Length: 208
Image 1: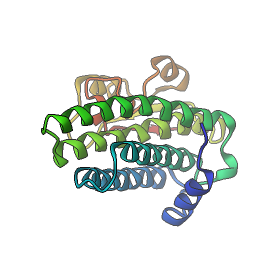
Image 2 (image 1 turned 45 degrees about the vertical axis):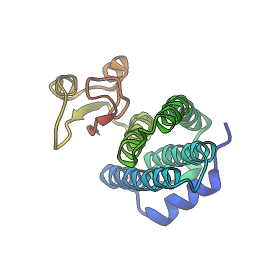
Image 3 (image 1 turned 90 degrees about the horizontal axis):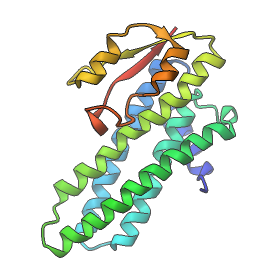
Image 4 (image 1 turned 30 degrees about the horizontal axis):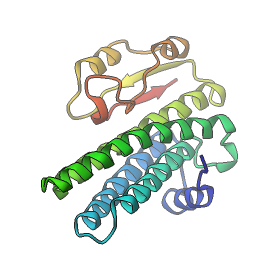
């Protein structure tokens, strides 16, 4: 998969020149997710107005997904493009491939609803917006490795969202501080969609 390096680097430089702390990095990822939701909503509106075809909508949406995961990955490395490795880009590529599959299924559903006269802007925008949280998964996969390898962290803890949380996220939070090795065996990250909250997960991680 071809990653649009130039667009990703430009986006990070323009929107987040300082990504030194975990708090700044997380804030930037949340910011990018909100932009993604806005762009996805605007794209859905263009589709419903007949300004773009379903194929164009699908192509442009995939570009938005690619940019979201690329910027989330670079944010995990403190906004430093030189720190990105082939392994990191491999994580981005795998995430995009997974989201593209969902997007293809989504496109078929959109077409079916359109043919049945049941397609609405609210429904399309909402579902497109759910893809935003997957950027959190990409961020924490890369950030966790960075915390261990570059910052010397040995432990991690799961922090709950300030709003609603599912039972499984609460169980991860209740583990408190655990070793990174143990966390790796659990194999779950905020935003990965693997728990009861699905794509709505807004939890975070902390390291020490």
